[in-house]
Image (cartoon, rainbow, N blue to C red; front, side):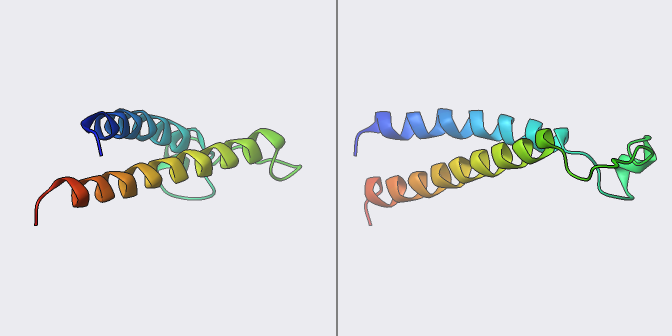
Length: 84
């Protein structure tokens, strides 16, 4: 496989790393811990999970799947590229 494939996966991996970190930080805290220490646990939702929260969950899962695919793709590329 060409080296451009590996560079593309590395760039995509960096982008998904940043996006995944930001998406995880956007999630609302579900209880104690660091989020409630800074005032995140004070507010409560009466309607349960909102549409925005569900969409944020979907985007987080999508980016996580892309991140995992990049890791697996790079592993396969390294297995092919490196001589045994």
